[in-house]
Length: 304
Image (cartoon, rainbow, N blue to C red):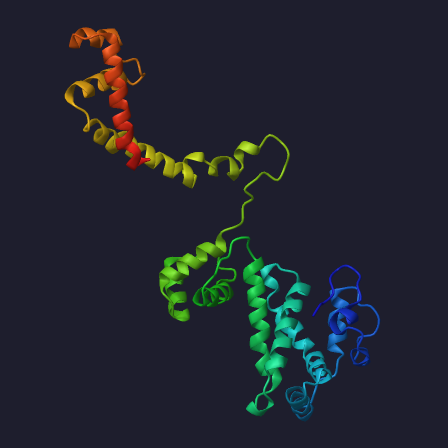
């Protein structure tokens, strides 16, 4: 179900297709703005209790869509009235009405005339539910309430907090008692309400990029794969290296440590220096080193 926006459009076909009954009830021609729509729905006739019950039974027993349409039309003014109470969230009035109309249609579909309740009372729940969902999804880029309890607190807190600014501990305690929730929950929701959305990237094309959040929030060191790689490297260089060295005999370990682990810059002992130390040829030192490194590589497989 559509309602008008500031752009000129034909509301009647959007609401009711080409059904002439809708036009007969007051929607004639094009409604170019929200004020014209509200004026039109306020002119639609309201149903008596007997008419409402008769239409509801026709819908339930015969699946009479014309009856459903008449019930929806007669309650469009209710949606407009409820939507007016949510204008403080800064969202378009027309969008609020449109979401409320969806809730109204859901209420008409589920309405049971034998329960002894008027449709206006039953429909209010469905209309508000759709508006609440729309507000929570569109009021902020990041959702401020996800659970049922948080949603209830969101709307209650905002209505009680209107114009208070930052709340004092005394006000928080009083509001928590009024709403029957924990003061910590009030503090958390107030923080979400008072926060504001910030664009990650700069909104201009000047040289202010380095001051935008994207510049200081992005970091390769905190990227998940980088963190895992760093953890793996640390384990390999500490626990893994010691395990691998433990598989070598004393001479092989001395050669590897002197050649590769003596200095951080990698400038270890030469083959000739170690050859003189062990009284063998430089070629023999190279062979021992190659065998030792191969053995260490096998021991490090478990850490890679």
